[in-house]
Length: 207
Image (cartoon, rainbow, N blue to C red; front, side, top):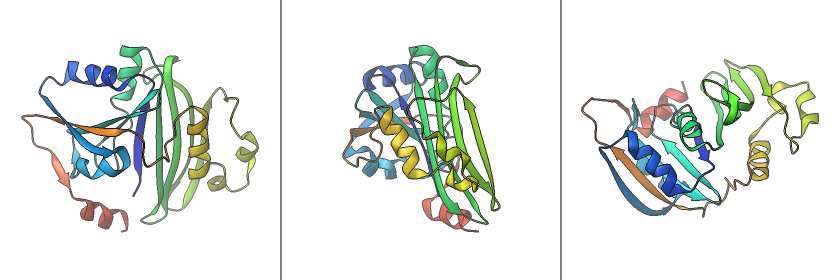
């Protein structure tokens, strides 16, 4: 089972303020724990999602939500790109699960990017039922190990260690278990959401 994390290049108070302008009925609660250790506060998974975690990571703010399948990487990052005029990075990694599914993906959005999601750069190595696909779009960045993109096996062109190196080059120390104490933001909504427990998600992913 994988996880999608967004990183917005703005101070956490600014990101939270932008989130709350739309979600006026939201209760924010400090977890008192570093971001990676706070992820259980997002459970159960939901569709649509109602919980978001935020934490400071250097000059970036990390966000994760409790959408089913490990989080929704399409929101609220693109909206914050437009409202705050900053970059947003979405990092996704799902190790092999089910009948040969897997994914490692990096998306960079920002002012001047291609609408509607404002993409600047996108890379992904994705397997569906064991069949790997490689995707690359946007201008290559100076820190990229472009020689890897020519590997015969598409699964070898982009992996988790490479994703972490790229994030580090952007100033995001994503593999640091101690980064930023997290705050949980719970939307108070009138609609009902489909809920999936962690155990149910694990069973589903391993089918």
